[in-house]
Image 1 (tube, rainbow, N blue to C red):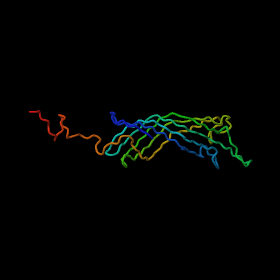
Image 2 (cartoon, rainbow, N blue to C red):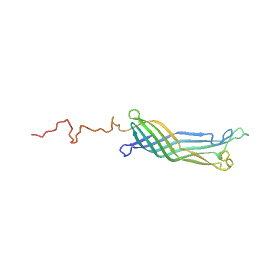
Image 3 (cartoon, helix red, strand yellow):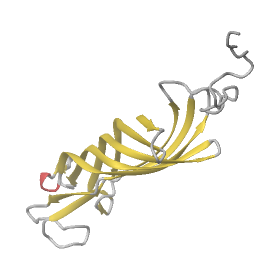
Image 4 (cartoon, rainbow, N blue to C red):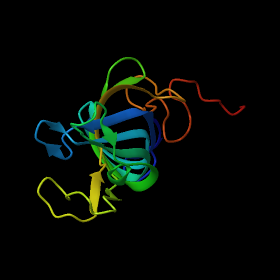
Length: 209
């Protein structure tokens, strides 16, 4: 994650670009259960979840508490595999009519909250929780209508709906780059500089006699 702070703004805001690249996946064998085992399995895998968020901060003593919101984009793979069990043959049969595999890129929204606390020199300990909202993918299966739509449903084509709204929490060490702040207050008042612009304690020049 990279971020840019705007200290001179009326509100303490920061812009964050948060690309999360990896193989985060979830699967289940209970998508359409039948007696004795799972008939269908569902699998979802995120390879990219990225967001551009605006962060609003408030300071509580040494800790910054923040809320974030902004647009997000993901790249996801959804798959449902249907295996027809056959007692007459030793091999089970893959059913393409009830199975699919699809890749998609979706636009959504991201919201989050967290806190930052000073940790070491020029570093902060950050804890945040984010919720990415990409909605529901709907896939048409059982085109032939030869199977039930659900364990006890009617025989007709079905829609499989897969929600992909990931929630993530993390603890991270944040480093601030650029010009370092001086120790103590960021702004100090020069008490040795009077309003007249003549430094106190120095002899004033005398006009020639």
